[in-house]
Length: 266
Image (cartoon, rainbow, N blue to C red):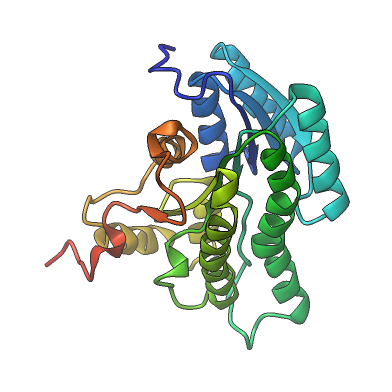
């Protein structure tokens, strides 16, 4: 595969949740642009498959299994990556998930609520907590947090999910303010509807998946669901020096979904 302009040449990039979907697309693209990629996921098979895809494309990657809701595992993973590569320049903190079934405060158990708070908020807290000191030692870096458009405009019956994503807006902005003087930029991506395994699982759990998918598609001005690679292109911008004066921002990758009320049938 032809390299573009080696925008990440000489950089070390950690991408959590890169065993599939958007995370895998980011890992492949970052490696193609010259980064040494630390692939991290709780799914060993998925993580190794991402590494294999990168190596088949001529890139450099290593897999680090990590449960990003576990403080010790996150600390040890960050330490292992820095020991192997000497530094971490880029982090895409991408791990996230939802609850199966109806997600409301009435229907969710306390255990469900706590589990999603850990997966969607605590994970980013732990990753940034342990990587920022390493970045400061090496003169700075770029941190990207995946939020999703649900943080701004939620669907019905995904209450805990939307709540966790909204919290990440302020985490992104607060980190950006506090660490700009250390040459650390912190931005967020807010993907809309993206063809990922999680997206498919969610819609396939509904009574009429085809009808639900089509209803969503009609609300997108561009008229189609995004691919993981299209989100990865925006992540690359935030990871590279092309965005060297961009921090504390949320970039929507949503095909116009958040532009306003839209129905392609009208």
